[in-house]
Length: 443
Image 1 (cartoon, rainbow, N blue to C red):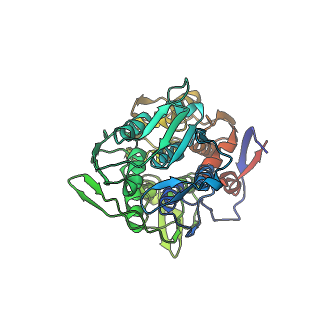
Image 2: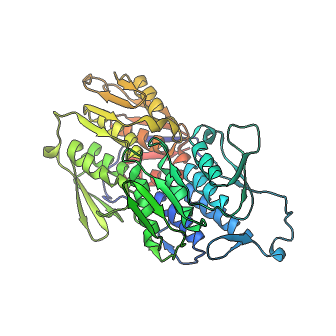
Image 3: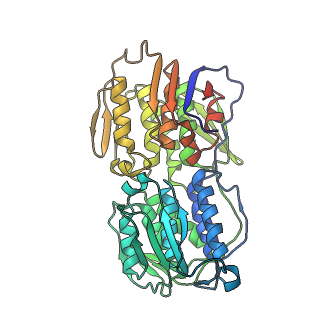
């Protein structure tokens, strides 16, 4: 059933001090690509159930149905398995508004024998993609725009890529470009050399990719920011995916906003592959939330004494852009002065997250200092939330935006959010978890 609105009402008496997180979408998606390339049937435990991961899993199953894999390159499926498929026909794969799925598949299909047609939602036309296709073309990939759109539909005729070239991508390009290229590098004929930058946006996601690749037998060396990946393939092994630290940000926000004495979260690891694990540092430093790690769970608790009420919360989100939305809503609800920067990539997310948040905060009445890469509030009107009974807002079809706006239920009597089902992109059970704290209905 499709829901048009989520209505979040008054605070409920607390009887459940636990919060269940989804598995890491970022780790899950990378493992699916690596396992596919390794031609392995080994299990990935605790795989994410997010829409994005399920979409990628379905597409990989369809691609695998069409092909068989040799040690280092793909060859066409046996004729008897494709007897109903014309040689000149294209296999269509719709990536919707899943940026990771789209970018990873474009790189993968470039080395996968067959003819492939990538479609996507209109929003994907405005998200960064061309630098990736340009680099792949320079490596010899056969990629072309097939329609009247700026990017989609995209035709790919897969074939072996020689590799061997040194690739340089500007630091402001998506980290997913580097991850997509790195993951296919062991299956190019000569490997790849990729020049990295210390200023690379979302660099922790690249580190995550390289760590998973190493765990699966990829051979690489890194010297003076030059990454050299050898063409030796992967040896996949069993994995268990850890809980999603990006989603955990909303649990931290609830602890801070509701001043919860404790909240138990299973699956969070102190030593994590995810760069967004830094969220625990931000919430302890500026919002009074402490974290205690035990066996396979974390215990969060609010401590008023640890809040730095007289300090401006200054955070650079260049390496962790997905944390911006929950941290900005937490700050304004607690009247915490803040100065957030490194926000220039947010315009290219599932929605224009900075622009849309600025618009929503202005509707409420906040006086903002903002530009294309920063947002700050240094002083608050003490009566801003007085007599504010109902907040109506759009999700902008953006999963993280919908979850962030739901946090305003801590200061409003009622919050109504349009198109709440978009949270299924990363956190399918979010509304169920939120209903532990607030009266909530979906209609």
